[in-house]
Length: 590
Ligand SMILES: *[C@@H]1O[C@H](CO)[C@@H](O)[C@H](O)[C@H]1NC(C)=O
Ligand SMILES: *[C@@H]1O[C@H](CO)[C@@H](O)[C@H](O)[C@H]1NC(C)=O
Ligand SMILES: *[C@@H]1O[C@H](CO)[C@@H](O)[C@H](O)[C@H]1NC(C)=O
Ligand SMILES: *[C@@H]1O[C@H](CO)[C@@H](O)[C@H](O)[C@H]1NC(C)=O
Ligand SMILES: *[C@@H]1O[C@H](CO)[C@@H](O)[C@H](O)[C@H]1NC(C)=O
Ligand SMILES: *[C@@H]1O[C@H](CO)[C@@H](O)[C@H](O)[C@H]1NC(C)=O
Ligand SMILES: *[C@@H]1O[C@H](CO)[C@@H](O)[C@H](O)[C@H]1NC(C)=O
Image (cartoon, rainbow, N blue to C red; front, side, top):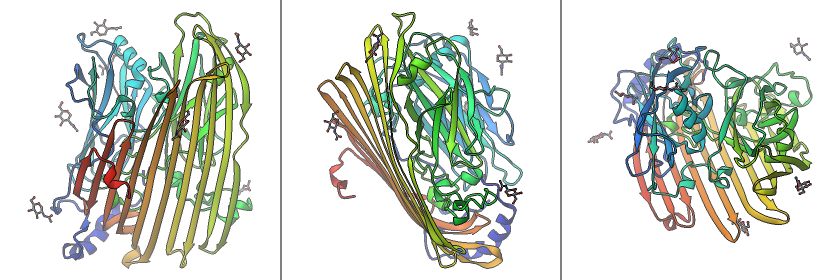
């Protein structure tokens, strides 16, 4: 992810390794090959979910793919033919993906994804391995993708994974195993199944997985550059032609994104006055401010968007923060659901329609992919549908910037509300779907002391409501709330030989609430995932040479019946504290 000069890494390291041994702070440790680190925890962890794996043994577990990723830049994804054990057929009550990876040596952090017959089921980042033998495991409930997994199992389909790695500068090879665990019968878990995905999605409303999942991609991922599309600018839209069954009664578009190169740290991009005045013409990238919105179109009509949750990559800010604990969402990057049901009237004619994916204000480059989840009415040959209300004004934007040379500040505010209403007539009756989305976003960047002190403050609030109505009566309704504030303070001092010593402090939080009401029954679930980190690093050309950091993570999940709190403190590459309790009371003040 970081096209940087790692060759200087070891040279500068040599200068500092002498000091590091006698560093007074126990939280400071060197990244260095061959050096025995003070009990560096090799297992990287994502302190999130209560075990997503059910407590019972699976009906069967299948290793779907085993692959070493050495020099894989530009290579097509690794793919393996899949065969379902005959004694483990569909249907399953639950399917869990387990991605187990180890790094043979030092390497940069990379983005990876796993596809089941072209349907993306996981977007993830690798940690930045700071010692040979670093390893980790990502588990994700993928029951939602049952339609794709069923097709995989019935037609001997293909499981693919892409991880573009390079050994040009660093020797690390990533070895990955992708395993699918299948469960039948009642499921016993620490939390109720709806919580198992770890992120609020509208699937809360739609308990049954979709009947069909269509990958929204024009690429032949098996041979080309993967199933994702590369978005290089604001004006680029990745399009594909999709035809859906004529008896569809519900559709949800799920979008995956990751951001790279000039937009790797988009939320920290200042807004330069020159950009505002139209003079920059993007000859100076990273100056167009910290707002991005991924959006979808059908036949060129805007059908919804989402400001992505800001997943911090393991190499960013201070890489020592993310060893051995992963940043929020880094192991299982969130995807974004847009309910397309109000637009079914445009799609039920049996013809292919143009689906588009774009990213507002984007620069090079974004990797976007999407799955169209389709529910069909088995009791009808054709359903009918129509759009009742379409209200999608562009968000109100406020952009301000004041700079004198390096110093100054900039601010971007965005506020928006969209609403789509449509009816679908099927064997279930003539039902109306109401979708409403509200965004409130603010990014502030301040630079002082001739560029030496930088402060980033972002707040990303999103509200979504999807209601299913029969006449004026709401049959069910889900409200999703996301609040994601982040603050980063960095101060830098120039050190010898062009290196920069930086001190950083970070606060990042993800709060998600789901409020589901069906008739008189209301259930509410809240997730609060928070990280506070502090540390320093000696950076050379953006690469950590020496440093340390301490991170406190608290993950709290609460619903009507469950409370789960996990607290993990790490410092100096070691887990210092890792506790789990079933009581949220003691942390009410956190
Ligand atoms: C490393 O672990 C050993 C055994 O667990 C312990 O005795 C020692 O104090 C630890 N060293 C550090 C620097 O934490
Ligand atoms: C997968 O199956 C296809 C078609 O049956 C075959 O051509 C290909 O060689 C198989 N790949 C592997 C790795 O076995
Ligand atoms: C992958 O599975 C093989 C056994 O099939 C095991 O030897 C290896 O250690 C596993 N690798 C990882 C990274 O889990
Ligand atoms: C899938 O593979 C199995 C075992 O090799 C074979 O019996 C079955 O006919 C294949 N199914 C299809 C649809 O090719
Ligand atoms: C953008 O800048 C480049 C180089 O500075 C220049 O050649 C080009 O004409 C500019 N484009 C516009 C649209 O101003
Ligand atoms: C379904 O209801 C909408 C109004 O909510 C109406 O406009 C439409 O004609 C109805 N469709 C059918 C097939 O009855
Ligand atoms: C949840 O939604 C119901 C109606 O759907 C509403 O009465 C209630 O106030 C909501 N609760 C919260 C905490 O938002």
